[in-house]
Length: 224
Image (cartoon, rainbow, N blue to C red; front, side):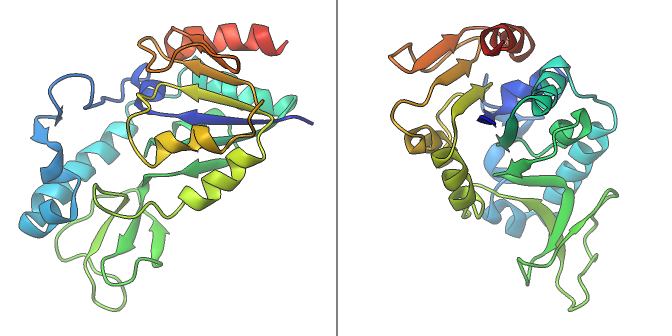
């Protein structure tokens, strides 16, 4: 059974109504990204950061997986499929994907500021004063700018074993995620779906300059 690896970015969830911040002025919901997505921002104003992610978590209840999420999940009936996503939402899982690696963390998880391995499922708000059993403040389980990406080694191994790589809705400018394309075998077919593709066609890169939902329709025809 062929192993299809799907790397997804913000454009994957945009059609579900999940807002991005890299398309325009660098603001995320009216905030400078470094204020709400960096360790320094958390140190300077933890209440702002916690409330920012509380709002993102609440918004997840208002959005649904789009057809592209569902099409990826449906591939599991014919292929081994691993999704590597830069997104922190749970839309891939809700669409039915069973093997999802979150490079940048997950909105529906929290962790202890004193013990990074103390991670747990969490659906309600996080407030200043909410602590782990050892008394450390809880924080979103999100990889902020300047922090290590703990799942990158796992993602590299997955890409190395891929028979097909599909890239959807990412600018290919956020590292280390953007480097994953370099870890597939030299002749592995690559399909890049994005309305404003940052890569061009080559001997093994096939560009589909469309949105996630439209591009997945084309890809399904190619895969047969």
